[in-house]
Amino acid sequence: MHAAARGAAATLAATIGTRPFAAWWFQAVAPSSPLANLFAVPATGFALAPLAGPPPWRPPRSDALAATLGTAVARAL
Image (cartoon, rainbow, N blue to C red; front, top):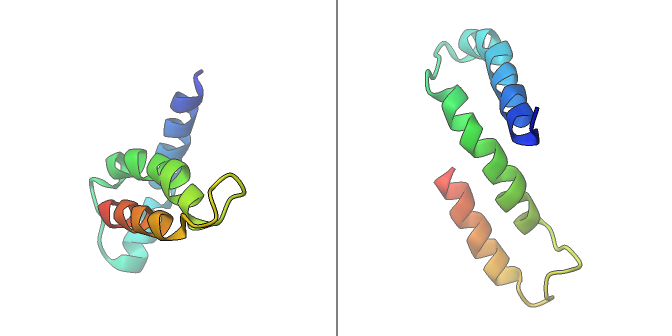
């Protein structure tokens, strides 16, 4: 099984597994959440997380650009 398929399966399983608890807690269920999470989880891991901290490979004065890009990704999610 490919890594992408394993990641999608894990995301789907976690979403389905926590759905009853989320429905009880929030008194609502978002039917699109499994599909939305298939896009949101990779976007968070590959785009948002690297922009959140100051990694050593990023130039020291690029913090403003990283903050702007991170904000754009967070708003898109």
